[in-house]
Length: 232
Image (cartoon, rainbow, N blue to C red):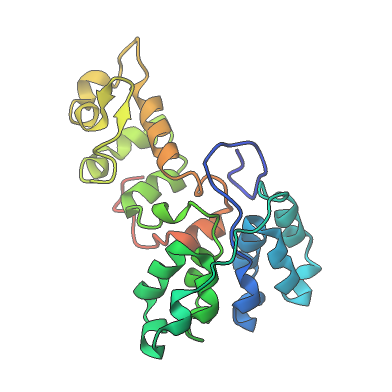
């Protein structure tokens, strides 16, 4: 698993090659290296529509070659895209467009000009198929993952984790994660069961895409730029 860049290492996350959406993006986004690296990793075909400068950039080409979806075919084009027939006001509504993109990345072609120039929208449009379910992950969750989620982070993050509804239904071993966290002082040093390691595993399982992309792309897809409340 590669934290500092893009990796093609085997990792079963159930994701598939994304749609080739860069062809519909604004020229500004075709010059955005962070976005282009992510999109060519999600679908190497996107390199066809990157700017000439980025087509000559070894890091961008490397991201495309590192794609775990390199040999896959793009997802099929739907016979009809909903946004094709929608009013201009609908095609300019970000929430509606994102909902359409969750069904098919090809809907991006019919988004408003402004949204086709929005890096966040373009990134999710071309994200690997199956990853949209992780778009709404809580900021607490993303803070833990972006920090690397060591045993120390599990300890330090306990206060925030107890408030995080996203993880209350998870399990670590035979126990619900909610029970483990609420009883953390008595279970954290259990000599026969490493609960901290299992919590880390639960977090990783919930956000596989985050673990596969470069830090710049993680910040684009799941922005958490506000203060970290002194937790880490």
